[in-house]
Length: 85
Image 1 (spheres, rainbow, N blue to C red):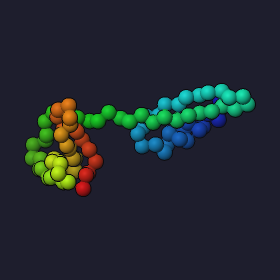
Image 2: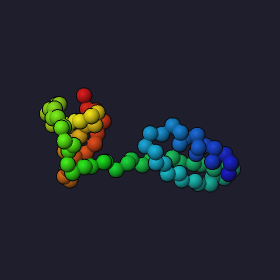
Image 3: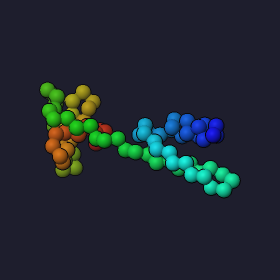
């Protein structure tokens, strides 16, 4: 049991999503731990900040303000994204 907790702690430090699901299965004479990462939900806002600017890049309009970048979300609103250019 101590080995599983040590492996889980070690792997958690190197992931970027921050959310990991572990599945523990017992196989004769050993324990198998499988890691599955879960993607975080996109951060969507309804109104862009005052003073935003627009830039078209590769045929898509992007909106940015103070090192935050947005694009239109299909369900409505604007999705916070990594810098596209």
